Image (cartoon, rainbow, N blue to C red; front, side, top):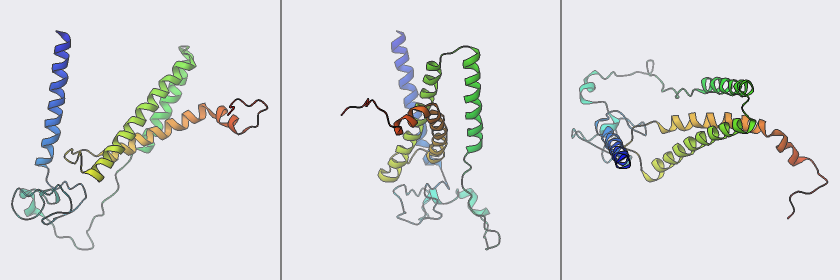
Length: 194
């Protein structure tokens, strides 16, 4: 009975998420994934949609109720689009505090070095899966037009996961520094016989 109920809840959740993500793009005005403005028919991408019949892609123009308030820009008041704010410093400081806090707790609670390394390896794996997963979705969006209906900033999260993965990779490399240095030293006994 519990297994059936769990399957029912899981299936209902998946269906709800699919319906929610597929219907988001229908109501999205001024949300062109390529940053185009007033894109005429037939459109630069395969997502061309024209619900109001004006010959311009709805994703590249403001909503009809916002069009009357458009401001004509001259060269003095044009605002440049800024790059997204990636949270490198915050992620770096949080990672350092977790790392040193974890080392302190491991020594205080006498957690073995093996368990501590397992924790960090799992954390590194999660950051890799997040970075690789969002990277693959970005490839699918660019090359195959898959996942375009999902209104989610995959590039931002790809960079955030990659920052975490890079920092954890540095910690990982520092832990194994002795091993990496031993690769370049000459040894009398050849362990790797070919």
